[in-house]
Each structure stands twice: as C-alpha cells, then as structure tokens.
Length: 165
Length: 153
Image (tube, rainbow over all chains, first blue to last red; front, side):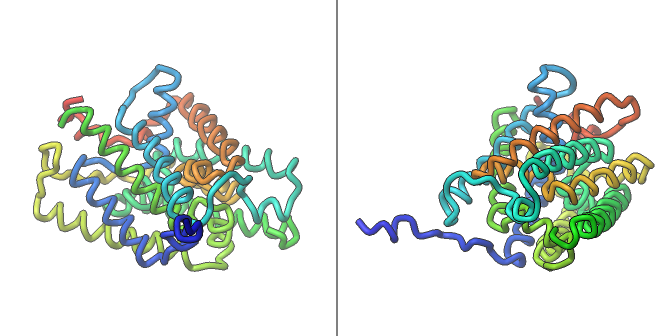
C-alpha cells in the first residue's frame, strides 16, 4: 500500500479566507433558520460550566455544541490536514519567551478572556459574528471595543517584549 | 423540536464551526497574534466576509418572516449598549491579546493536539466562574430568552 496516498491531506494547511468566511456566515444564518438562536462559543462554555457544577440555568444542546466544536477540530486537524499528533501549541509565543513565563501568561490572559466575555455577554463569535449579523448595537459596540483593546494591548506587548512578540 | 434533535443540531453545527476555524488555522496563536499585530489580513477577511454573508442572509430571513425549524418565526435580538458590554469587551480584548486565543479557538487548539490549550480552557472557565459571581449581569449565557419559551425542551 502506498502510504503517501492514504495520508495525503485533503485540506491545505490553511484554506483561503474567502471560502471559509462566507461558509461561516452561511453556517451562522442556517443555524438561525433551524434554532432561532445565536451560536456563541462563550455561551457554550457557560452552559458547560453550569452543567459540570450542576447548578444554574442549563441548555443541554449548547453543551453538545461545545463538544461539537472540539469534534470538528479533531476531524479537520487529525484527519483532513497534514497536522496529526500532539504538540504544545502557541509556537510564536514560545519562541519569544521561556515556558515559565508563557504558561502563567496564557492562564492570566484566558481568565481575562472568560471574565470579559461573561461580563460583555459574548465573545468573538457571539458578538463579533452573530451579534453584528443581527444588527445589534450592543454587539457592534462590544466588537469595536474588544478589537481596539486587543490591538492596543498587542502593541503594548510588542513594546514590552522589545519587538519579539 | 425534541431535545434529541436539538442536541444533534448543536453537535453538528459545533463541528462545522470548529472545523471551519481549524481549516483556517484560527486555533493557532500565531494566526491571532499576526492579525492583532496588523501583520496579516487573513482573519479580517475571514471575519468580515462571514459577517457580510450572515448579515445579508439574516436580513432576508427577517424581511421574509421565515419560519424556523423549531416552529416560530425568525426573531433577531437587538439590544442597547450598556456599560458592561464595554467593560467586558475591554477586558476580553486584553486577554485575547495576551493569550492569542479566544473561547472557540482554544477548544479547537486542544482538539488539534496543542496541549497548552488546556491551560487556556481552564482559565476561560475560571474567568466565567468569577464573572458569574457578579450580581449585575443580565445577559451572558448565550441564550435569546424571549424565544426560548417556545422550545419543547
């Protein structure tokens, strides 16, 4: 058997944005057509957290949505792309800083992500895509705010790291 | 719609969303960081074209008063900006810049074998937990409550 043929990647390392972006837009709209609900990732985290600690308001399909996101990631990266197996991730971050600094920074950054998304009522998917697509003013304001704060913070990180990040 | 079917839709659309992110390497720190450094147009093109298609489609559905699969007429939710939207988004953006990932990409990164993403996912859960202790959050569980009542869950 020709191994090359079996393991040939179906997808390139990165498919063009002008295919994936419209596909994501179509997925969001189709989901509305089915469920009349927005597809937000931070909402799925909240529901999963409520489920895990057995408390609060729970919407079970959003937990399946949470599992689905991981499943889609597994299918594409492990079976359709040429990127199988384990690795650490955060390549550019690790190339610029030692691991003892990278790990706590990822953790602190992620706590801010979770806290901010919960307070703002959504993240990049919920406000950025679903919210703007519904022409909701609060989502437009939230998206403009997190885009600018992220670009400013990245500029600050670039200065602090001496241009390494 | 029964709950088994809803769960299937959740899984199916989640897999579609996670798969699209993975196909565009949006789960990689390097992609997000390059976008926020304004080095690369890719993610702006990705999000921009996604928003345009979704906005146009939802606008048409709303105009035609399309009936959804769960039986009710399509209902979009528009809310007025409150200070929490701005405060939360400013904190979120800062975290996004530091960790170079956000909730969905972190999950996909772990699914792609990136083990450090488990730290990010733990952090996001902790952040959501800490924020849910605030007493002033009227929104933030991802649901449109005015249409949830029509669910046979």
